[in-house]
Image (cartoon, rainbow, N blue to C red; front, top):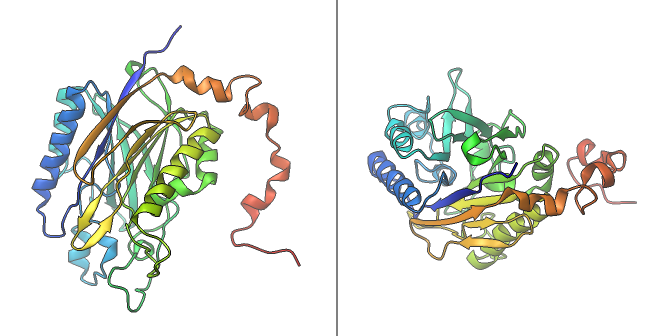
Length: 317
């Protein structure tokens, strides 16, 4: 029995300034969702930390101020209108946000919600970049290690609804897209569509001048295209872009097919919707029986022990 195609949208966001009221940001998200639905999208993907500015660039020592960036429940008072509008439109969505649990733990989190408003999957960012302590002399910090714990849910794949063809979905957040181990964990579960939101600096976040917006955008796209090909999966990677309070973020939102080919690509650093129709039978070209990525036939896990037993590099003597 053939599976229906899925029309997916990447809802890139322009900058969200630190002083921007949450109500305005929510209105932008709803407007992007409506644009996506008007183009026939059944699933729309928003960026990482879509509800706020990228606050880890700041050293925030006041606990009340810091916790104002976090969601205690989703849906909650600040997000319920997004859920309500999605249900009215019959569209699902991926949303990145800062999560504060009942016991006080903080995570960089994403969820995927079905067209009926039901939670399909939840993911917490594993590969947190930056540092715990501020780096002296830098105008902008990267303090995710200070404000978040590493994700504790692993890489759980999950099924989309029947209306989408029951695809196997996976989620990553920002820096995770650069780590092939994360993609392979999903690949081994048969992922067919990877959903990714990101906020990535348009400058060298380590304070040097080795990277600029062009090379960082190239690396972002490269990581998505390569890993989509290596795991024979579609992927949607969505940026929050532009200049937030003087700090640049790259754009480059893309929808990629299982061959690593770009199906749609954002052209601006502003709020922008791009769409593509996905035929999941395309995943079989790479992973079907006897194909390049027929894992059961070709993988040799006994030779990969170093990957899970070692973190840092150990050069040969």
